[in-house]
Image 1 (tube, rainbow, N blue to C red):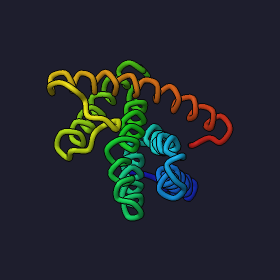
Image 2 (cartoon, helix red, strand yellow):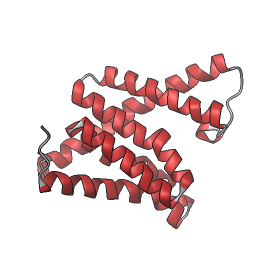
Image 3 (cartoon, one colour):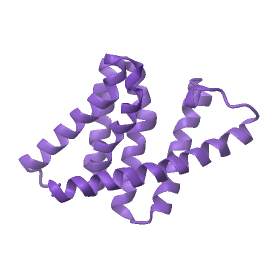
Length: 169
């Protein structure tokens, strides 16, 4: 049975709010804050690393909240930043191997980016990739694995830093 204390509920609510705010900064204050959207995955990572079920719930709630304010940012969060935060956090809960975490999260991100790029028709990374799909998918995969590896290092550092000062459990 999952024990929900007031502390856990409060942490979850605050981290969801932080994630929503970081993702909506460019929509509210202009594209100069676009880099802040990358940070919106960190609160989801923290929740997912502590408890994957809570992380998934926060990922969905955050995506819905963002989508109600701005559909473009909501879709972007659900298919990229939120998914990265959830997958890296959930796999960090299961294993400590950065390589395994990066590969599994990279595969999930590649699948998601392929849906956005090829099915929905929104160019990933702002450009259309040249060449056939047989070239585009491996390029997306390589990018996704490297990105997830770098992000896992950053998110893990942030988690450990905050957990030393304000324990999550």
